[in-house]
Image (cartoon, rainbow over all chains, first blue to last red):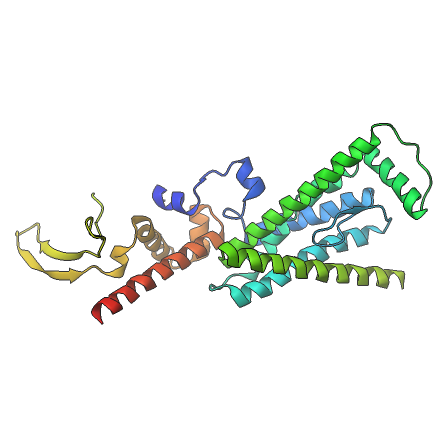
Length: 216
Length: 96
């Protein structure tokens, strides 16, 4: 294989950790990314269920409400399908090239893997104690939990981690969108933001309907 | 082997072939021949096309050989198609 061609297609021939973390899609898409992404989404749902951390929207992470495991898994899948389908439709309308649906579904699934980090971080006992205290104070649900002096600090740090995870996920979703649809510049940015807003609304509606169905 | 120049180093206009020669008998043909669109592409683009044809036009096979994702290869092909269209349009305008 000619070095010049390989270098032009993928400048980092052996992608380093940074590339895999923030821009993996020049190297992986399609079925491989779909398998990895779905595994990460389901694992994040399972870990989330251990600490009642919900991914209840494309851009949402909330901790508190107890629910069956199926709800946590369904939320992750709804988020992924919402953003994938909305961007697929936008891409079909706007992109000047033909692209495979499996690439969009796969890369968008893989783009959600950082949510696993947020789910794991939320397992930390200080964070759990502080959330339980807040839930009791604000909603009158559960019971009062004695707090340690450092719990608010831990809560703040993990809240920041969650925000960074959302930003990281958005960056990956954007990169997945641009490479799948071969769009760039302002056109890509504007259509992605529109897609993100629409998918957030769609996922919220779908998750609320799911909860209503569960409550009968 | 030196790279085939396709643009005039002085005014950046497209270059044409003025002279062809036979290494065996020394025959020299003089004239003015336009470079074909593929010859005007960059060396990497020409190599991509050669690999693409060798892979029977399979983008999936290209992605496997180059160890990159399918969309990366397809986007590169899109870029080359755009470039060829620009070259052809330029030729049409030049002839018109």
